Image (cartoon, rainbow, N blue to C red; front, side):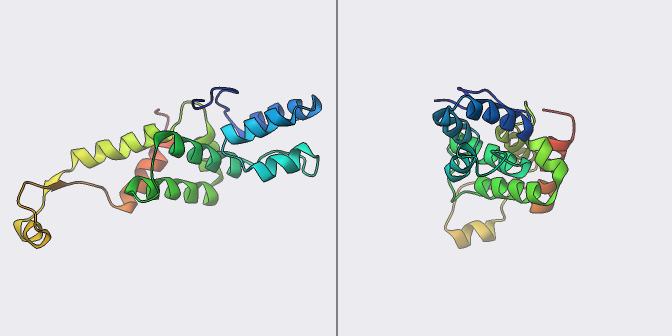
Length: 166
């Protein structure tokens, strides 16, 4: 099943919760579990919601980090690459900034769009590694590097999600 295939992309935690409430009123626990999975919400939280132990399926924080994690999985981003660190950094920003949590969940904003902005910056700032570094690494061919530092990545992420562009 593809990204947002069953329920569609939600714009907020409130939209997810409204859908979940309707499913709970119908007694459709399997769809509650599917809704949670599609939005990166832990099954245990879905079980608690379905049983009526909690009043809402998700919070804005959970819904936003869930979206990042679902997109990360869909894109095949492994935990051992730099892009995974950027994903974790986005979740850290969500945790510390309510506006980011709201913005990340918005329809039309995507992890792939954000990473594309960082990648564009990376390719726009390529420089060739000095011979001394290449020699120490045992590399003889031309090597360029342009990944921005975390301060600049922070700016790009904030501009992408909080700016107006998609």
